[in-house]
Length: 538
Image 1 (cartoon, rainbow, N blue to C red):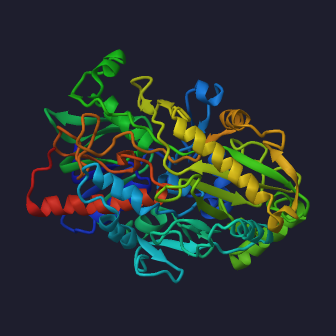
Image 2 (image 1 turned 45 degrees about the vertical axis):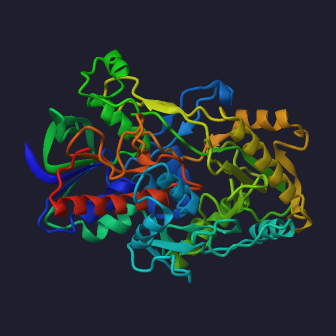
Image 3 (image 1 turned 90 degrees about the vertical axis):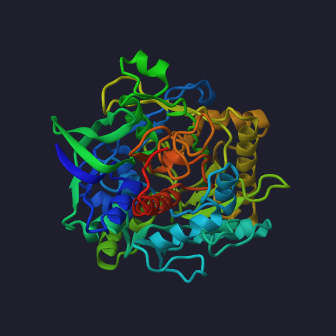
């Protein structure tokens, strides 16, 4: 059994950051384990390739949620990155920090060191923002953040329509003031995707104290009493073990971090016994507190033949491919959402509670992401801070088997009200003259949908996840918390969880930027504790 100081399990959005930061110390040895293959694919580098990656399986775990009555009995797709860079290698590349309220709420819940002012330095540390920005933006980090390269007449019209209804234009929604409309910022560099693997691992891949193993599926954590001492894993069917002299850091993401804990005998005793797993450590919160952004997608038929639907076909596509490879511009640089909107659905709120993603494109279904033949545009509606909570638990004791993902979407009345209000606001924006002149008709849900119950029925039948899975190993000090505010697993030494699963509540917007921040802060905590000579124990 080989020895390392730190073993990072999961080479995704958080794991790549952790491996890079921990291996900055030449006196420690770091092992990074990733279950998927190397991140070598044209679809990863070309921004528009996210659509192919989302429906593929080579770099995507391609999970499905359990059918639930709240969403008309549908099994909603739940893609997760399965390669170096994790979901940052297959996602829509949108960079959204969230609102100060998100992090101040974490701190108010008793998580010391997690207020907005305390996490802001870690957002800045990771980031190199190409735009102007103010003092809240980072300029020297490895993660390149760029303004949207292209603009489009229909996107501009949508922003103009929102402004015409009194919503502010906002040139930078990532500076602590999120409200308003504008173009998204992206994790891209020179017209190419800039995942955490590209940003954090590629420049330091050859450090002598860093080992990276891909196709390495973790099967269980190795425990000696109440201390984690290593990891058992398989590479192409061959069983291996690695020992950590200091710590094991689980960074498998909010779907698979609780899965690995449960496979290791850490979790709810009744559940573990059901699957024949020896109970090594009781933690009732493992796999609970699952939060996510539920998103109905409205779309409109457009009069003008200038949307991505037509531009991505035939000779137009050939021209765009040539344009991209000669200039790194054009439609191949478009991301999952083009225009953002953050609005309040009712008076009295401290900040926006609704997020819009608008794109001058429309899809047959959100799951297949195949563009329609006729011109179209889409607005995705997503509640910023949903109250509904679900769970993610193993369905078998087999490593790598899909877990049971139960989001429990729309179980809260607040969530139902907010979702309906968001769709109604989107319709009002599209009825404004600034954009209405481009619209032939509302395709989905269509003008026939008017009442609250009709709107809610449409959301239940068609809404999807926006892939922002968090919370399943939540941070806190209450009985359902899995890690403390230094991300150490309660009751076990030598083990931390550092990824989106530790979020007590979902942040207001896309979750990749906060996940990277968590990893930056977590790496510093590990270094601080090691320097202070503290025993890493809850």
